[in-house]
Image (cartoon, rainbow, N blue to C red; front, side):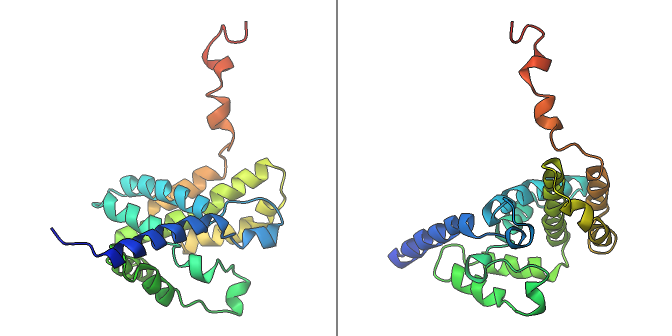
Length: 202
């Protein structure tokens, strides 16, 4: 068994604290929309589950790789922050250096290689995770529409372009199409105890 050094243990703890800080990294949505939206860590969680569902739809071979890629897809943002489409017209983030420094000295240094694979978008798993990353935007837009925001309507044309030209898999396009008519509240309405039990509330 490979011996883990004290230095690696310390770097692992630092890494875990750094991951925790993702809850404080606000996505560009907050500036553009001026409303409460998912932070980086919350966004990442749904991307993991979305990617797993897309992976099964696409019959991908490695769920382990999908989960790992989804967990690390935005990890560099602990150091670079999140930049939206407006910011990216003016700034360039060195995400590779950020990721290298994040993993350096930890027991997870091999993840840096996986992040590079994700960025290349050549493997099915990397394309699935990027599709999940894009689709999470559309899920949140549906949730914002439920709150009465007009922004989802304003973004619809642009999101349709992303659906047609940026999504890699047929499964992601199918999910996008289903989303356009989905009710973001149905999951809790239909699970309501009043509907499940005729005697509820008596």
